[in-house]
Length: 426
Image 1 (tube, one colour):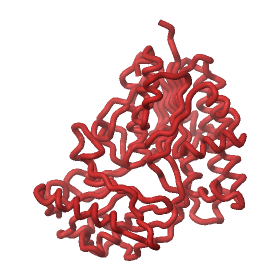
Image 2 (cartoon, rainbow, N blue to C red):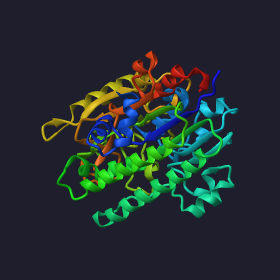
Image 3 (cartoon, rainbow, N blue to C red):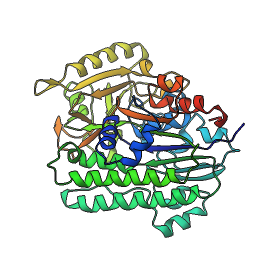
Image 4 (cartoon, helix red, strand yellow):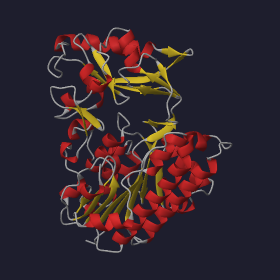
């Protein structure tokens, strides 16, 4: 059987419609040519549409109930202490751990810090705190540091920092691409390269994409031209028969009005806190019934999960129904702000279901959610112009297969690739 190489190129936070627009208006001509050689379709993201959740689903082809990742943060068992995601929390095997005979290159993949041992090279992405611990084998770290490799960039704190932000986006992508190209000149079987600046520019300059009169409209397009050039540089180093998968982890849309659901829960008597912001979720008082974390995740304050929880299993179903009714009833400016609310049982299946949030809540178009425990304002000013969306990720695969046509979410991406190229064993 002929040995086939496979490449996965991820564009974090790029919606299907944006990619269609930029490939049709000649902003991304190289990507447009690739699309002609395969198939592009719109697919759903994970729920919640969070990069840690989505990339974990992509790399394992499993749903969160099977891989146990529900966001970039989680609560330590039996506490209100928040911890950031680390790779040892992933409970399902990523594909490269199943194929140690294949040399794998992983560059800038979010939610994989710290990188685990593998046959190849792994540079983890967001939220890696420092470069020297984000690289396997570790002896690559010095080389990357000398090249000025950037794990992430600083967000713009104000309008005055936009030019610096754009320059950093360009530099970070150029250095990641240079490293990727050099690695593709060496021995490899599978490559996984992720551009995350696409997510950052969407969050902070989404208006520049939607509004042609925005002063940064051309700068937005220029960045995507660089993304297109990066894709071309990488693909040019691959054999012509390389199985190529491109995808996004979630979409992006206008953040619109930022609505604080924790303020709502306080006003309605579901959330009680002490005014001690330094304590974060440890400020939650007994008598709390529910609270929001990480924009989409609602947790019930249950007696078995949290130290001051007193919601029993017998009370859980009625309380969930109450919260769903409350959330769906919210109006702002005469418009509903909640698009959908799902219980964990509706979304997930697997041995880690009990670790999931109790509810996932999604905002309507032109609304986004905030989770500030200590604000009394329902509507808040927000630096973010773009928000993650769940229904418009994209999936591209060279070639064709029935499984590809049936793929409906990011979890199906590896399955589609495997169906077309079973010899990859991924």
